[in-house]
Image (cartoon, rainbow, N blue to C red; front, side):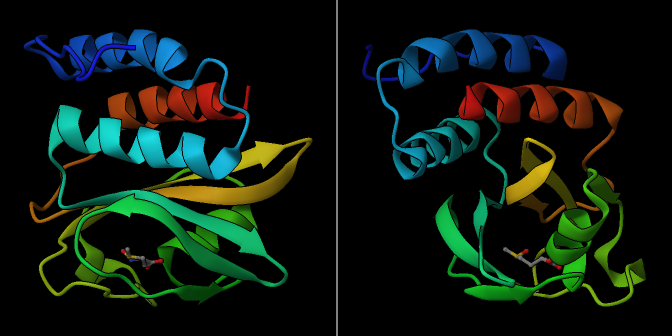
Length: 157
Ligand code: SME
């Protein structure tokens, strides 16, 4: 494995494609889910430099903070609470263009302005979520949704 990623694409789609192909080799041979999540969080941070990118894992009836890159964050989120708990309950990706407009949004950082949460499903059960926050409003769109859902598939295979 090389020491760093090579992400040179100018468009978001190109950067995601470059990242996805390198993730396959980055994760090859590593079965531990926390190790896989840790390197994916690091790779996403390196490729896109978002404010906060990381994982929460389902443990019992809560989401518990997992590997991430960014400022400190709340450690536990209840089912159906906040954006993360809602994505868990709905089993689908949620894009929040403006966190102030999302009822129940949990503000781990007052600088976060927009957010995307992608649930991670195995056999139709949510085992965790990928959560990404930006300090810019309206940062995430359907390209991020599609590409991040593909990256989540790489993590679980
Ligand atoms: N904003 C999230 C909480 C997690 S932090 O953003 C890292 C939510 O509403 O679920």
